[in-house]
Every structure is written in structure tokens, then in C-alpha cells.
Length: 381
Ligand SMILES: [Zn+2]
Image (cartoon, rainbow, N blue to C red; front, side):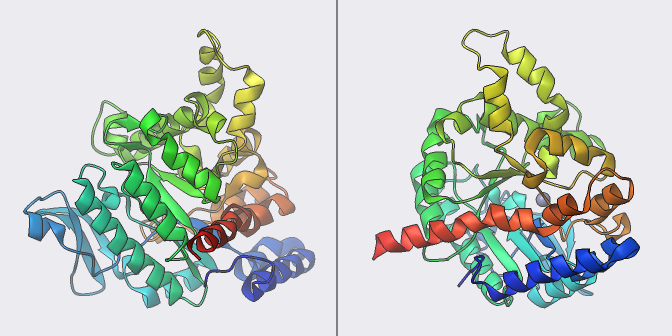
């Protein structure tokens, strides 16, 4: 049973410890607090080992599957192609929990690896894949003593099936939310066909995390550093612009949506997008779009503390949450919290704001799911 309410003893303990750490830490407060505080990471990925191997059964080399090698290494493959070399933290619960301990993270949201969105697939197969993956993710979170919180995937190429899986995710599987891609096989997020899905998530109170899935097509140049450095951020900005300027957040005012990587380039591009939009007939007044922007949530995975104040300005400091991209974030880049503690050290962020980013804001973002879980179960009675 997933619990993130005031009745949750782990959450209560976390809040108490955070308060104590901040009050007592003195000049070295942030170091003590990172090790003691309620650190919640909303952006990580997990790929269960025993997913159906649809690549083998359909002879379609686009299906992802996980192969393990010696030495705690593995590969996500698509057909004969190695898509990504991974470590066992990608699929092994015990290894993941040790990694959490090593990085001072107490709770972490695990979401599907974006390669498993499979929006290109035939709907029945995508449903089977999503159901299997969601069951495994829910089992993993259920075996983690409350430290992992699972977001599921939904087959958005079939909106009715996606809504059915959304309800199963927060109902039978008691998961915390869903992760979706920035587009669905050429459909942007403001495509009218997708609106019933967002309405369902809104009415159920299910938080949605939007993750880039097509960095290569968002820009004209492939390969590194372009796809990783610019493509993924542009892809996410396109999704955010669709939510704000395409009518999704207007139609779904209570939708709880978070976007990866600090919302990509959107925070910086927003003034230009907003001004440009006013040149079009029927445009929304700037106040209305600003209000919608501030309804979105973003993670802190922006690499440079200097970026955080702009996220505070655009989205509100209480809508910025720690994100790590574990297990894909190399330890050589430091700890995911460094961007936040770095901002405190540089005088860009006060202690209360940092406390929120490292944990309390995420609990607020995730808390909606308890109402969603209850609503679905009540209806199923
Ligand atoms: Zn990610």
C-alpha cells in the first residue's frame, strides 16, 4: 500500500528530521541535511528483467529488452542493436537501494525507461507490454520498504486503452502516477485525440511526468552533443508549449504535470514564445499563460545552480523538485543534490526553498495520487 499522507510514519519522520537538520546544522547545515533530510528524487528509471520479449515473438527489432552481462553490467537492446549499456542498478532492487544510500536519497520515483514508451507499436501489443511493465514496477516498489514509488507507462497510441491502464495503474496496482513522452508518434501533446487522457488524469488526480522521447527529431543535427545537449531539452520545451499554448492546461486546470530536465529550454524561451503568441488572433493574455506555466512542475536536473532562480521565477520555487535520472546519471558528475546545495552556497536559494526542492515539493506533487487511488477503488467497489 502506497502511503504519502500525514499518516505515513516514514514521511512524518522525514519531515521531522528535515526540520531538525535545518535548525541544527549551522554553517555546515546543507551537508548534514543532505544526509539526514527528506530527500525525494522524482526522476529516475527502472527496467524490470522479466518483461515479455516481444522482439523475439514478433520478429520486430524495435521492441526493447534487457540483457544481463557479467560484472553487474547489462544492455538494453532493440533487435541486434545495443541501445544502451546499463548497470544492475537499472533492474536490481538491492543494488538500486544501495545506490540511494550512497547518494543520500531516501525516496525515489521509478519510471519506465523512455525507450519503452513504444508508441509506434500495434496497440494490443503495447497494452500487453505496458501491463507487464507496470506490474513489475509496482512489485519492485512494493518490495522496497517504501523507498521506491512507481510511475507506470500507458499505451498513448490508443487513448481508450491508455485511460484504462491509467485507472489500473492507480487502482489495482496502487502506483503513484504515470510517465508519458513528449509526443506520441507525431502527435503533439495538444492533439485533440489525446485530450480525453489528460481529462481522465485530471479527474482522477493522477500526477503525470513528461519525459523527452524524441530528442533527435526535435533538432536538425544528430549525435552527441546535439541530441543529448539540445535535442532532449528542445523536445521537452515543445511539449510544455503544447500544454500551455495548445489548450491542454486551459481545458484541464487541475492537471498535475511535471516535466523533466527543468522543462528543457522552455524556461528561457518562454518570454519569446509568449510575446510571439500575442501576435496571433485569439491569443491568450500574458497573465493567463503565465498562470498556466506556474501550474507546471519541473525537476532540478539543470546541471548549473545559476539556472535554478529562473525556474523559481517561471514555475514557482515550490514547483521545483529534485531529479537525478538515475541510474543513468554518472557519479562522476557529482550527486544530483549538488545543483541545489550549490545554489545555497552561491546565495541563489535560501534554506527553506532548498528544503522544498530536495523533498517537500515532491511529496506535494505525489500526494495527489492517494486521492486518485481512493477514487478508483471506490468506483470499483
Ligand atoms: Zn530520464
